[in-house]
Length: 185
Image (cartoon, rainbow, N blue to C red; front, side):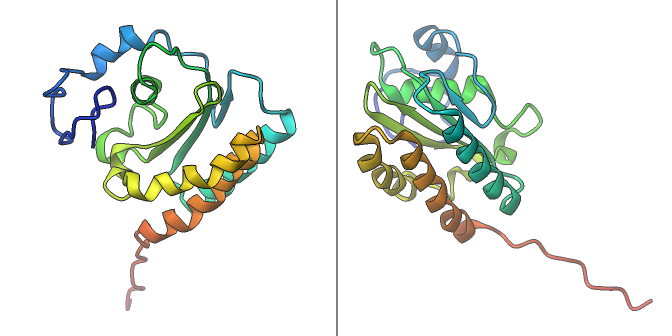
């Protein structure tokens, strides 16, 4: 884990960044107000067509049927340029509480896929319950997969490619459910 502002390596239990002293509460004045976000697919830029949003929602629904604990949120937004993109996405992930109030800590299986088309930056942020399984080294290739689509301004194609590639990645970390053996009664 790295500080979303200065990129200093951090332990998950660190109360603040030892280098820049950033904490989640300190990001809020820098990040500003949380934009109004539609569930699953939030496009504050208007770059996606209604058909694109529907394709993305169907793809998200397919993933969530296979992985019922997963809460997936896509956000396309232009973030203010004054601070690092990673800080804005960190602040949004924590402020928006995509997984809900009851699914915190190790029960937070949210994934935020954020894209800023003006900055040309994107990130995939896993909730704490997925963080140990979905490290940056596993998620960055998904963003690279989408880059050619995004360079051609085919935003939905890049996002759909990431969602398709997420399926086998999530399958590789899934813990199979065990069913109790039938009783001999």
